Amino acid sequence: MATKNSGDKLAGLYHKGQDKIWDGKKYLKECIDRHGGINISEENADALHNIFMIILWGELAAWKISSALATELDDNSARMAATSQAHDEARHFYVMKDYLDLLGKESPQEDLNRHADRFLSYILDANHISKKLLGMQLMVEPLALTLFKIVREKNIDPVLTDLLLMFERDEARHVAFGTLHLPAVLKDMSIAQRTDLWIWQFLGYMKQFKILYSLEDSFEQLGIEPRSVYESARKKQLHALNMMAEEMGIKYPLAETVMKFSDARYELGTSSEKRSYLKRLIRATEKVIA
Image 1 (spheres, rainbow, N blue to C red):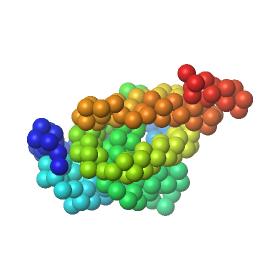
Image 2: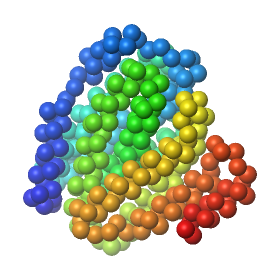
Image 3: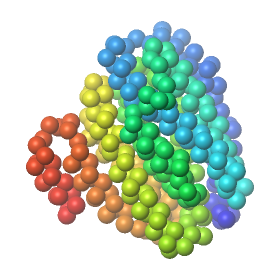
């Protein structure tokens, strides 16, 4: 069960969500009217589609998980937060689909980047509430927030820029849900269960890299440095984990070690800087021993 303080905060997320509900179809139309439609090159449209098709189906996964959590969680305040998130994710899904349709791009789920599909399935198929909370709220959401912020700041399409401001506002509450309630779930778990969770988390982090590698060409087309995406996502994920640990009054176990191995894994796989494998291996080794 959540403490009274965390319970109040969780219930507060629900009420904040209710106060900040926005009509997705109406807002999208306002954005289109404000900017005179979508005016970007075909190459940029393709790149945006590659990136935001993953976001589209990630929103559906988040919708499914938050809906499931609303029934699986024992704490009523946490149920309220999960219910609010499910409402947000449903809106994000249909708004993003409408936007991608306006780009003239079809986005069937069977065409989803196979690396993203495997990563999302890894979280959807998780066998414990703790994994669903950690995977969605503290892994997927920080990555999504990173993509929203970086693309928004590039202002590639003003319509999308305005939409992403709304997405970011909602997603910040979803991360808070994880940092506030996961400690209560962990409290009731055995050492063996926690160990299983940390291993599952580490493997999940490794799966994210193939998604980022597969999008390098799309990032570069939009003038985005692929390394900046990884580094920003890393910071957001570590910050979320540390916020959760603060709620527990502890230091998150092996967080810095996990991030070192994550940095090394990124160095080994990235091709955006066109370094030889030997140079990437040397840099990866430096990350681990630093």
